[in-house]
Image (cartoon, rainbow, N blue to C red; front, side, top):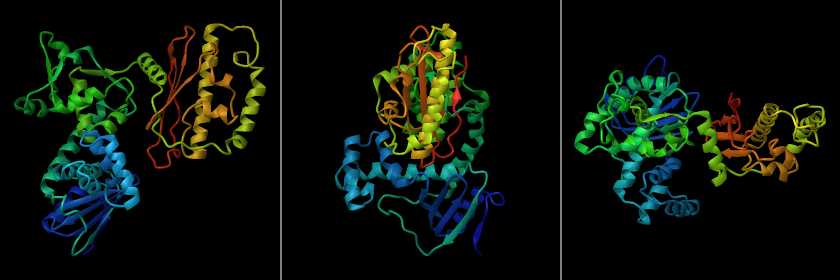
Length: 428
């Protein structure tokens, strides 16, 4: 009898348990609107998993890099060899002595588990199990994993995720360590069980209520997450940069919040942090794409805006005009900043990615240099990161203003332009 149907009728845990009990060999394919995942079974044990959106081979290098098992230079050399030989990345790293077999095996196992655990949160989708006499997997590096332990961990995650997400509902939010976090230290191994095994309903006492403590003990995961909270990284960024999985990272952040060791960043802190980042001119983590035919599309819009600009009483950027009040200038600056966000959004839809810098728009002749400056002749700051776009401007005092910040979450799809969410405007 074929094992196929929808996840509404048969839960993923039941499917896994049935395959395990019957010691089946084959490939389970899971399809949802978000992804397609395949899980390989050998005699009822899991020996592999892959994802259409987050391929195991593509993620392996980043996981090894984040865990500091290899250096960036070593990874780049291995990827260059892979492009020439089409060998598996893991085998190249082993052959060149860049990491041990144990390190690679552990990294592969963790990635397989992360792919599977993500599917446990699916609310809907289809499944199909194709029974085979054998399955292809890396027998040298992958140890078959019993389903029982995976189901137990998956059930725990399902119970705790809603509680975590209730407290951390905005994945674009930025968190900062509190002053109390200056006293943290990683707990000794014998004390970790007490820290890890806590009830969500009875969260640890906030550290502010323990003023006499000389130090505050945290788990290694919590300490690692604290190091990633720099006033720039969003929750999604922290998950991406963390050497631990999504669940463990978010759970650590939840615990840090409950203990008063982190707090949400204010608008003013975000504006200042983005200004500092822009001044440092950090490299942009996106594919560079030209803008070959944007002029034909945007020319009418720009021409109309330039024509109307001279009739706009709050426009202080084009030509001589009486100096308006500072709050009107700030309003005009906000309008200009919002317009820049829309133009950048149009570029992403037409070309598949965002420009590396605002100067590209002037280099291609679509905007003038004046249009990239505020009423006080200060340039707007533009920061493009893997998951977010930020535009920021200065206020009348020539300092970063929390009222002049625009944040746009970028889509996670492969093309990077479809389905872009609306721009979120920081309000006074």
